[in-house]
Amino acid sequence: MAKQVNLADFQMTRTLGCGSFGRVKFAKYKQDGKHYAVKFMKKHEIIKLKQVDHINNEKRLMAQIDYPFVVNMMGYTKDDRFVYIVMECIGGGELFTHLRRARKFSDEQSKFYGAQIAGAFAHIHGKNIIHRDLKPENILLCQNGYSKLTDFGFAKIIEPGTRTYTLCGTPEYIAPEVLLNKGHGKPVDWWTLGILIYEMIVGQPPFCDEDPMGIYQKILAGKIYFPKYFDKNAKALVKKLLTADLSKRYGNLKDGADDIIKHKWFATLDWQKLEKLEIPAPYKPTMKDDLDVSNFEDIPDSNDLPTAVTGGQDPFVDW
Image 1 (tube, helix red, strand yellow):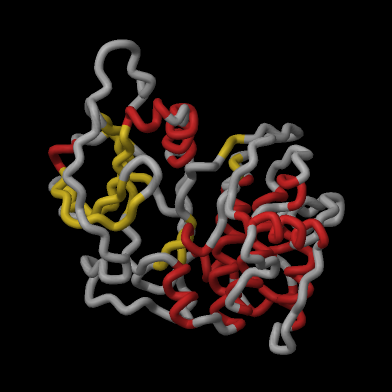
Image 2: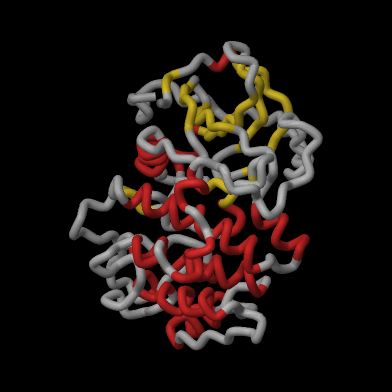
């Protein structure tokens, strides 16, 4: 489980990604010689943008999750300027990169990743956590070809029977109940899984437009075109996930996630073997070794040191 760590024990090398509050760096941990991804977040930015609860939340939620298809958090710490989350490093880069390169995935590949995200959602929903920000950029590929869900920045604990009302997510992936501000919960994640499966098989999401308003109109109209090559079982599942009526959407019925996990499309996968990583992956990212981070885009390092947060109350008490 995640523990408080000492930043001096990490040797930072290159930047792997940039987020709204800082960046993610590739780092070697002197204690065990392994490499991790360290997410730096600027305290003064977080405070200025009123995201303190969000970030404290992200850390608290990640600390509760330990599952093969979720990026696991190893530790956390803070100093005057930053708060840090230390995560396992997933070297294969974003699913997004591989999907754009391939244009679209085979049915087998789409099923393999779709199943892992379904498993991840079933697991976090069991802890009353919703993710709310699924998209190909938030799925990372491991060297062994398996995938992991990342970025719990929008995640939230929803006590059974309650709803939340914040509009968040990527336009193409937003569920109708979020757009209509009706309050939303776990079913939102299952909707996004439907969008993801469609996007993997077709190469673009089902509701597309140049303009976000156009996308929202299409989502609410709910018309989906399935190309000829779309597997019929995959199509049946996607339709059940992309159902605006919550009383009919898979994942939200009396059998919960089982309706998805035991669906015909997934029948060719052995779930026990999948969770033990015993099924050979249909595709593996090209990596020389586990230190190869060439699947991540090159991001120049920045030298800007943010202002230290001093005086007054540090809102990051439990770091």
